[in-house]
Length: 270
Ligand code: SAH
Image 1 (cartoon, rainbow, N blue to C red):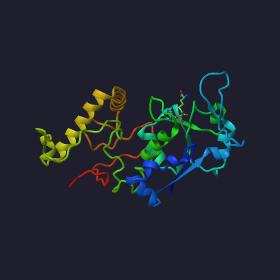
Image 2: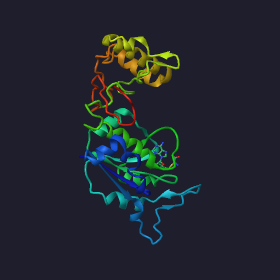
Image 3: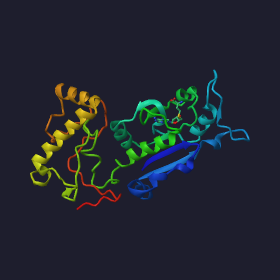
Image 4: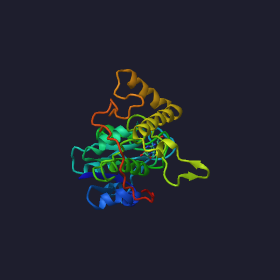
């Protein structure tokens, strides 16, 4: 079982949205488990103090290293990575998510206030992970995002090993545009190639669109994709058969094509 242990000042925020839909069903079915532990239970004074003023002055409060260390040490040591949600951490990528989902789970620490005492990060070997270049009020929403992304890749959660096959980032490209019925919406038809039944043409169109969108919207991803392509490259343009992986990511599963889905969030398909 893939096990998540979350250390937080707000355990009641969990499982929150992850108790619903596919993640919630998988949680109930024992595909993964979630323990949300209260950091405050490891405070030692009668006020339950978990934070203190920053050394050197300045606004806000800092989470205390000693309290957090006790909270972390209360969880039996195992091989799971210890992650600290952190605005200055390494930006989370689909490749990292895929690698995490193939492991045993993780211990996730949620910061609050101005963050945590620096000494704690080194002392407990925490890996700082950011969910984007903006500042949240706490690590809980970031942890929920991280967990959501991991859990949907666990075997069986999305049904038929869909595991993000042709999705955004899976080959270093953004996803192609999607359409469903009605055939005409406010005068706009579904692109003809998608309704013509020629699967090779559909694949070529999707690949071209994925490349166009990536070029237009994400020059950073496009440059990386291009350099892989030119360096002898797994990923070829307009060749959806290529099972390219993102090279710098060991353990990142090569996508399979076709995307059976059993999303239960109201999409009407069929
Ligand atoms: N003073 C910090 C921000 C603290 S926000 C700074 O300038 O970097 C409080 C907590 O919210 C952080 O400790 C972290 O756990 C969480 N957090 C905020 N933004 C985040 C982000 N983009 N990604 C992951 N965690 C974030």
